[in-house]
Length: 456
Ligand code: FAD
Image 1 (spheres, helix red, strand yellow):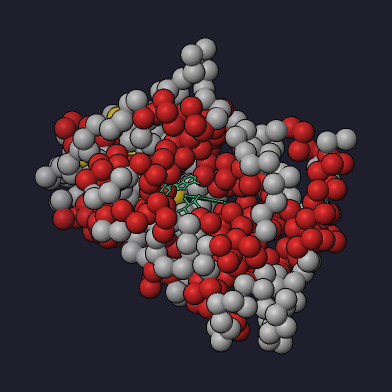
Image 2: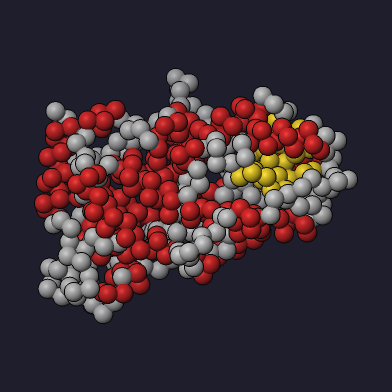
């Protein structure tokens, strides 16, 4: 009898334990189920759908080279898989385990209807694999990372199978183009293809390209101008490359990889936190923040829109928000600055920012996004202090963002390095570029006053 291979955020053939297991058992029917019912309000955002479309097309091609193909179905995961199993006579479903709360629910529902076998490989270590002395889950990053390191390096990645047995008869598949994953009009993703190559091949190339500059990462990663980081986040989110593969390749590069590897462990950390608090994306991890007097959106709506559109009057923030819109990605340092600006200077609830990122990022990831937003807000389990307020203009200078601003904010492209971070202060702001929504000092004081009220 054939076995089903259920693909989700693991769209690869190498180091894919579910595929390796399925391929040993007989004919394999690889299936991807587009399921918007299970995640409900966390269904995939627009930029992620663009990525998914191209990644699925690439996966289907790779499978065809192995004598197989990808079956596409749409609907509730458990219902679709049970029906497909009945239709094809499949007796088992193999899949990698995923830890978003809706996937954990779906896994339960699927296991209630078919014989589901879950495998590891989404993270460096499955959640809960490392525990505190008292047996609990770690809540703070540093001791968590230390414990993870004791289990590293991860096992050697599995090779892709040579060939994959096809069933005697292929079940029907939807047509990818009928799923409407790509934007129609306006085509806001027109620039994405210049920056990204979704799929396993593109992911591998990104890994290799990074190795050449990995030794500069420790310093270059904080500078948004230039490409100091790996840009692997969407590939890792969609599982086009395994974290174990990235780990081993990074260790083979010249230089000390430890700072890069620590970032990779943040990804594991975030997924662990979401297992402890599944509502991390919508609930303050520190309940005290429920009393935070955020601005009412009826009053703050225009500020939120200005932030989304990159028209806050703070060049570094606007450059980041426009990079996000044009490419579906933003540099990590700028994510921190832009998020902090929304939360503190504009005093807008972090959840509104997180939702915008969810829709706009090609690497939108429930765990990473929620944990990082709450880290910036100060409401997370392990978080920055709310009262430590980033000064966007100082950050912009300190991390040499001039070239980055020129690239993304063309109205300011003619300004020199000294004045571009704060054109208002040097009286060189062109009319086409907006004045600051709020001054730094004023914004800072309002934020601190709100925080003081929260603390009663
Ligand atoms: P590199 O610096 O090359 O790091 C390598 C990998 O490590 C990344 O691809 C990523 O998988 C992981 N990583 C790095 N930094 C972090 C981090 N702080 N937390 C968790 N994992 C990390 N990352 C996402 O993948 N999805 C998100 O939705 C997301 N939302 C964010 C929201 C905010 C407000 C902030 C401040 C950060 C967010 N991040 C998110 C984390 C980080 O910004 C990105 O992972 C990183 O910028 C991706 O670029 P890179 O692949 O070049 O990273």
